[in-house]
Amino acid sequence: MVLSPIGRDGSELVGELAGSIFFGFYISSATRCSLILWDRFKTNQKIHPYLLITHIMLVLVVTMRSITGLAIVIPPVINQTYSHAWTWSPILIFAECQWLTAVLISDAFVCYRAYVVWSRNIYTQILPVFLLLGSFALAIFRTYAQANSELGIQNISVYYTSLGDITTAFAGTTLTINIFNTGLIAYRIWTVRRRIALRINPSNQLSNLVTILIQSAALYSIVLLIVVIFLNSHTDLLLIFQDIQPSFIGIVFTSVIISVSQETESCDANNSGSMQGHLQLPTELDIQIATTTRSESVGLSRS
Image (tube, rainbow, N blue to C red; front, top):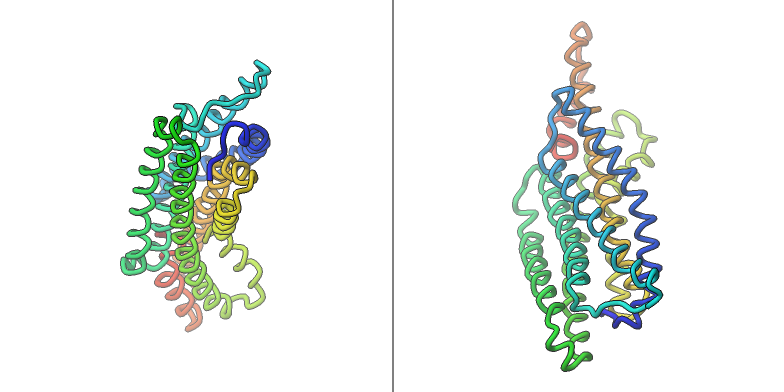
């Protein structure tokens, strides 16, 4: 569902305000992520390309979406016109394209992340990849439908109904991709960490749970579910969640990048320390833990 200018007025103001607040949190998270990646580069540590590329793309898209959103809502307030362009206007199409791009980036990231976590088992991503291709096609189709000003002028009701149906299909496909991959990632991390924790620190279950919630991007799946519910309930809250979604995507997946990078750094430090401690003879438990960490956790931290 996409609201007309009258229905969008209040929701866009609230949505962009909330989006700006979330963007402030994202800038803080993105800055921290950039510093971590830069430190790894300066110390000649490996930077996983998919983490770096995702970070750069999110910074560009989320920042541009925030600027565009403010450019949409501020001029009417300054001019005291309190009216917005129609949905098929170029600036709104541009803003929606940025939203679609942010969603597609997150979909691609979570697919590749699940692929890495499952030791690059391509069979785990057959269904998600097909869904991702479908999501990309729906994004193009949705942009075309939004730009169909002729239909909007001739029959506004059909225009918004068609655009709303495509948006619902796109959001539903994205939700399916994220729930499927979130489940895969969470299960894999939980089983590997639980196996290691039982040997090292059995009381560290809470820390494992927090790590799972962060690295599996579970919170984002919850937000997607809320968006789909609002799409079907035709509520003005949809635009608010849609406006904050790009910044929320940036926060969630930047947190994933930070968590993975820090875990990789910790793993590198432990491996270096183990190599330097050559005077200590490895016990059977040490060998088991090392084997588990290197073989089972390779997808979790070293991708």
